Length: 333
Image 1 (cartoon, rainbow, N blue to C red):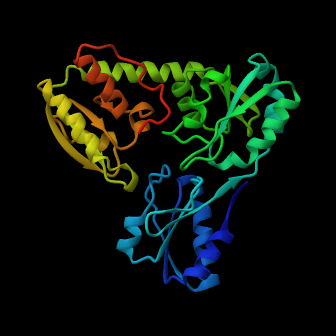
Image 2 (cartoon, rainbow, N blue to C red):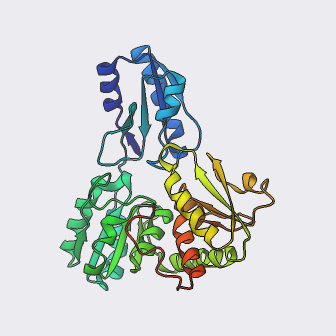
Image 3 (cartoon, one colour):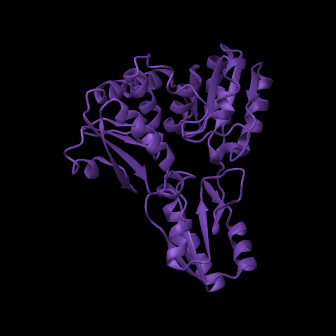
């Protein structure tokens, strides 16, 4: 069961006395978001506006939309981090999953014991469970190391583009255990650390070896880079979402590509998908500076769509150097 910190939202409303409240959340929380919106209206007589565009991460906040809508405050729900506010209007409201890990831990013990020293990491909804899991593993003779959080991150927390809590302990552990049902996050940990990684799914009580999936993801990412080598025209996509507008990086990539005779166009999009890109028929390949996971995990693009990490590899090859360890780094943006 997902628990939303409604009391924090109510407390902010009492303190700020807004006329209009904007709300956004990932698609999996949309039903709960509607419930919260109705509660706010009934309890406080405040108008709510649900911003129902897709929401994928902490970079996907809606400060600018709240401003345009005349909202006095925006509640961004479900991407729990170590700070409470982003921008001028956005307040972060935690969503916590109370699922128990005891069952999957019992199943995982034989596998994890083989590695002796385990790095523990998880996603936002399970950070409150990481201490208990650490204790249970150590009671069974497994040494556990949890990376320290900094900036946005809590101890042991990873995002889809930030793995520093795992990356910084990679040389001290023999494998990683990711707590939660998210191949997305677990594959990122495996790629960033280059260590055996296991996903502990508390719902199905399954232990999944993520390493082969990460290897397949890496092969596809490398293949996309080599396909883009032959491109004469390259479209550099600049994300229009609040946390994804990286103009300086786009200009830097453009300058590097033009040194090698590539014709480069800038394109700006909120949502980067094949439906939009197939309209741009004169472009041979794309590089998007918005979110690395669009390119690394994305499916269904007719043409190569590289992340900035892959663009770095492309430029290395054009400069006569080797591909490099593209994903083995703490932060991918």
